[in-house]
Length: 363
Figure 1 (cartoon, rainbow, N blue to C red):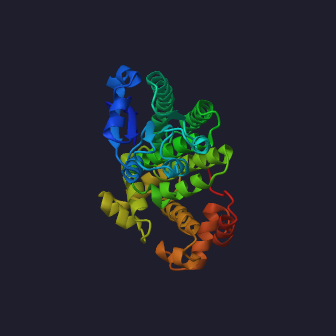
Figure 2: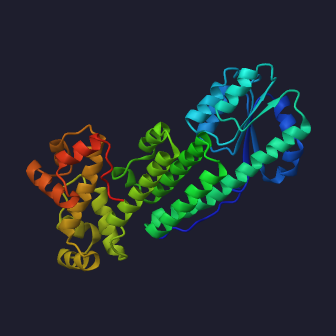
Figure 3: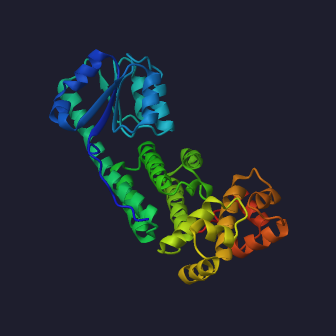
């Protein structure tokens, strides 16, 4: 499956959300900076904190401008949520400036800037322009992200490695090591890459961590090195699964066989069954499969099942005999033997290492 980068019309727009009343929104809309970039700005308004949070979770916004008085966010809980859940990389706070501790709190929570009412037109325009500069940086990162999506989907590990290096360099440089902003960018990138890959390979979450699993780990990362490591590991696991399970041959018939096997890996799969599904002679299929992939069909089925078993065991909810049974192994001892042949360690040791939080997945 060859994936190409496609840039949709409108993707170069700055997406700006204004959280406040109509008067406040009109003030932002009539500012010099917004007028100057009007053809490239998609501006929307929310009137309260709950609506703002819902929209931020549904869509990506380059810039969030918050009138804390209008939306009754005096405790800065919206800004704190943006930081904790990495909802927006650039937030501008507007307030009356009567409480210095609140101003200090805003910057601690990762605010891009803090403007005091009455808003000075020139200061507002300057702040918005700087915000758009951040958005431009995000757009560069977005292009790298799109290239990474294509590379992951194609199983192109060399391009993935190059784009990962560029991605980390740009993100770290653009945000000067700011953990909140970098976390927001990586979390959103991870979500988009995972969803794009899943649209091509709907079975991918059966073999690697899905986005929600990774999100929990991302949010618990205490430093940039760990954050980058988790992101890279997730990307590499997807590439590894795609290359190991479907990119074993360019032959269309073999790819169809692989896809059928993957989709039915929780069942007992026979060569006769797959040959009938693909409308080919089973002897011909067996010979062609070995010729194209270098392994027998039986060994490939075992490989798929053991890869699936790794994900099930990693979940920690199932016992080894339950996983074996789910994957069509009637004998747990035979399952353990095959698991060790493929993985290099027994299922018991695999579970022990997972519990110790050691990375034993091939990358």
